[in-house]
Image (cartoon, rainbow, N blue to C red):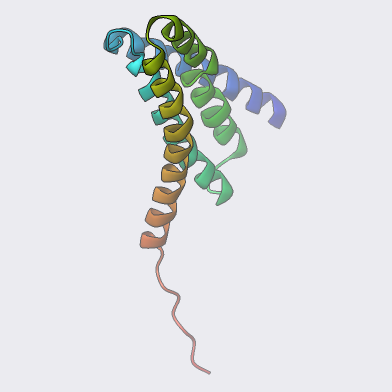
Length: 136
């Protein structure tokens, strides 16, 4: 039963993430030839995945929710195929922009994921109450 819940969460999450990506891409468009929409979606998704991972590592969740949000929503929201689709045409039209796009995605994505984990760790530390010492 638990496996069914996880797969349903991934299925529904993927639909939600894909729809969000499509809506944002349609609303933003690009900067001329530069696919800024895909870059911002992937960086934001990386940040949110860092938040989800930190929460999962602390075990503050049901497992199906983490899989639904991480693999489902963030998997549907971010996408390597859209990144590749945005970078390949740039090589023939504007190689410097293509290099900038690939470099920005490769550096900012992992940095954003780390930032999401760091933010959650910081917020979690700030909300912890110190334990009272018991005197013997």
